[in-house]
Each structure stands twice: as C-alpha cells, then as structure tokens.
Image 1 (cartoon, helix red, strand yellow):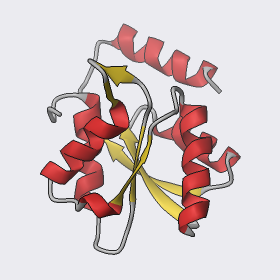
Image 2 (spheres, rainbow, N blue to C red):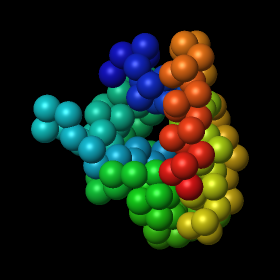
Image 3 (cartoon, rainbow, N blue to C red):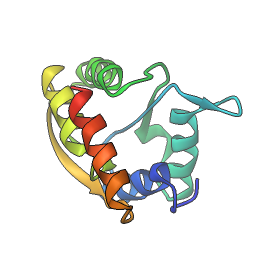
Length: 132
C-alpha cells in the first residue's frame, strides 16, 4: 500500500500511533482485485511493524456509517471504551460524528491529504456534509 494513496497515508498514521497492548481495527469491506480493504490495511500495518495479533479486521462495511457501527461492536467485544481514528483530514469530522452516533468516544489522528484544486476540495466538502 503506497504512502501516496489515501489508504497508505491512513495506515502510516495508524502505525505511527500504535503502542504495545493496544488494538488497531482495520476496517473496510470494499474489494480491489479480490482483496478487502481491511486485509490490505492489515498487510501494510504489519509491514510497518504492527504485530498481526494487534490488528482486528472488520471486513463488511461499505460506508462510513457501517464502518462506525461495525467497529463499535468490535470495540465493545474487546472492552475498549475510547479510540483514536486515523483517517483523511477532510473525512475526520464525519468519521467522528458517525462513531459518536454509534456510541464510541473518539479523537482524531488526521492523515494529511495533498492539496487539491479548489473545485475538487469544494465538491469533496459538499459530499462529506451531505453524507450525514
């Protein structure tokens, strides 16, 4: 997973924040070339030094809302009450809202996105706002 991609930036931020005795939930059921996003993230996290036993995969979600709900269930099962979320800086407000809606106390670990053209940034912000 290349650090130039959004997923690569998120994985890099998560790996840098990981500490022994903590969990990382690699979440995402979307598939590319038959590989689930969570599986690709797990492999990339391990390549960055995170032990496989510290990574829990959520392989079903296809949206931010599903990701939050399914991750919340995993967190409850693990007995985790508070988390940090590594995601794109522009997506972080929506991710935190959805996690709060799912009953998870979370703070953000923003993965800095590259600068984009103003029109693209505006369209992305509109999509994030409209997605609820």
